Image 1: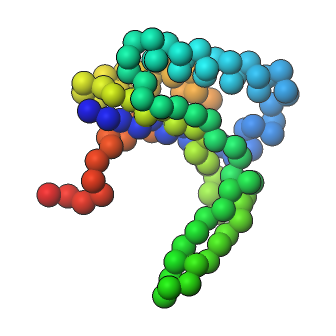
Image 2 (image 1 turned 90 degrees about the vertical axis):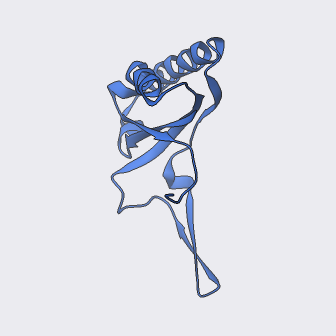
Length: 118
């Protein structure tokens, strides 16, 4: 079953790190990703740039409305993701618990599937 691990981090966290701390954190996440890849569980992963460089798009009455980041109404941002192929939800949760980001952020586990209930 496909699961997405979303890394939800404080918007103020990255700017508070020194460059050395930022590289160390990133290197830990890369090693975590490589381990998942070696175990045949990783479909895709990547980190995301700060929401300062993002844009939100809504279309209302046929007209697009754009909101440039940062998104001040949000205390957290999605800092990255892991797309996994797991046997069970429990396996995905166990993997999330070993993610280094769980030490400084929240790792949200979501099953991939349609956006409607049957």
